[in-house]
Length: 561
Image (cartoon, rainbow, N blue to C red; front, top):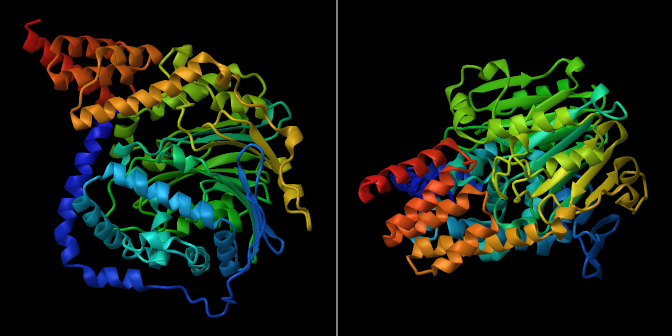
């Protein structure tokens, strides 16, 4: 864990303490948000009856949920907004309840103090006090339907409906508190002369990390709404927003977090903006028009690909600004990481600082480098790029380094070929399992129950069979043990620390954690050696590097060196 991430816990506590006074005097505004409910009187409120076909297959009429052999859940639902919510909730209730449990467990890990948890609950109610004013009624009705299947175990946080509504802003809040490093995604598109068939190809890694358990039950949702376009998205139980998806018009959307100031009030969650784009847009121009009319509360890049336009563009949204970044069709390539590129943000100081201090620009350059080396892009080559673990110029930067495109923590990787309505979604672990292919032409064919087009699947990464991968998984386990020992001030043997760095020797974090442990124990010479070794590696961010250098300077002074 980098010092940059560690400081986020202090940051959160300071924020919550500062908001405590505000919360005491703002109960009126909070109550309106908590009490708001969508008008669902025009819909049939009868709970649907779910049929259990097996432990991994359920149906409600033509709607179904099933688990494929790669471990991905495939869900197909159709209907009006309330029906969509009820069917999703009923079919995936166990997955929904598990997802809520693991997400709240992650919050407990980040904020272990019961006192701060209580403030956090009040803060969320205050922060989300106006969100209901910024969400379309059809989506509130759908969320209401899903919320009927939420677990009552968490009513102490909020009642089911407002709680599920809050969860739709989790991605936004996660990157507003960016020190927590919950998000850091990479996307790119190639078309024309850059691809083997001349068709548009898009690849992306969704690096939203809320623990390993959060990514276990991925759902590939195929949605047929009463109004608008049919679409697919990669999601999880209880989530109707879109982080990665494509509609039946060949329009794709993915989201990449940008640098934000901490907002004081929630507005439209970005995943609901992208949901609206998928449901109602068929061109880049139509996507831009939808994004423009919605107020968001964080900074985000919405990467849009279009079969009709035969190219991609990036819509850059933030609370006080809006921009669109496009390249001439002759360049046949668009890249996006976690900073803005349009003219609208050319003078934005936070964006400039983010480029300087974060790993966003490094990953951007790495995508440029890999695409330059790829003569004709194919879906298989897109997957190879998404799985790449090296740094610039093939530098060995350690497994798990956020400067790599494959940070070994992705929730999913995805590839789109919009002109053919083809999409490939990764299976676990990370984006290194088999990529499962889906043809939306067939998925949305009337009466068709088959889903995956398995003959087009892309094989799992051979790296999974290597000793290096096994070492990395052992490294992650020991990292948790060492971080716990540091926070709880317990003792570890030096032999274990040596094993730890040997498992992932090129990763600066391994040496930093050993240095931090030894420093806290008063073993200054051992700490200095570890920090000096960390300094020789590719350190993830500028604040991380400055922290390492500060430790070295202090220790040298203390040891008289």
